[in-house]
Length: 288
Image 1 (spheres, rainbow, N blue to C red):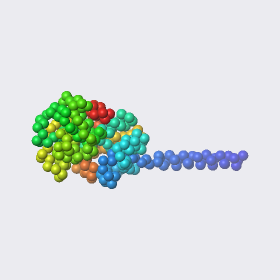
Image 2 (cartoon, rainbow, N blue to C red):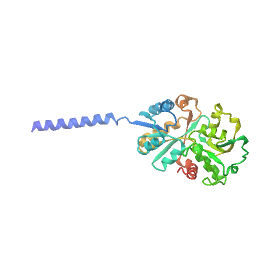
Image 3 (cartoon, helix red, strand yellow):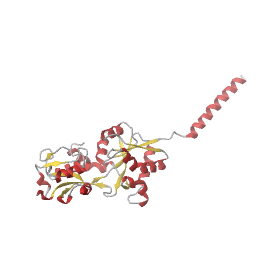
Image 4 (cartoon, rainbow, N blue to C red):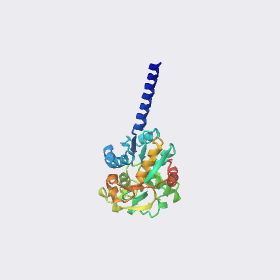
């Protein structure tokens, strides 16, 4: 009987000590996977976003790993299947994904040149004779890609607002895939007009004489790239990451080491409603 009591006390003590060890150790460290669209090589993107990942790791106390899928479709799949915890994407991809899965925008990025907003332009040759958007009815257009926000989708809304039927009143050439290919097509008169992101025209000056080109029209401004959380991320970590991002206020010199490599200046608050106008543009372009 005494031996049985001793055995029971020993087992109870062991269970109690095990519980104390478990409670004291806390939950296992989480790994936060930060995904980005593969617009550049994996090495370039790692270099761009590593300082931000290190900053978020310090702010959350968790390891942050950068994930670069092989292409845009793989990025979408990774978000949908929970292979990313937070992600940084162009605004069009964000609204496309939000339409399919539960994601939460955490902060809106501010870029060095464009700030927190971006817009597209329609370019033509100076000797084209076009003076307004309506002059482009029946003309040949070239754009970047069907999923390009500032190189296709924004312009579709602009043309629609100008009274053109985007399905019948313009002739679409095959997508050029890159902004500089669009610029070259207009310069070489392969296309009558082209749509690119506003800051991309100046980048083409080393390849061709952009003084021969003219901006015919500007699109509306739309919110820039958001950093968002997927449903996989624990709510507590979501709040920590959001707070950490919003501490990086735009144009604060102290942010340079963290955001400079990514060509960002900071983050500001954002809500899903901020992208409603983009949704309208995406529907007109058939991208949503």
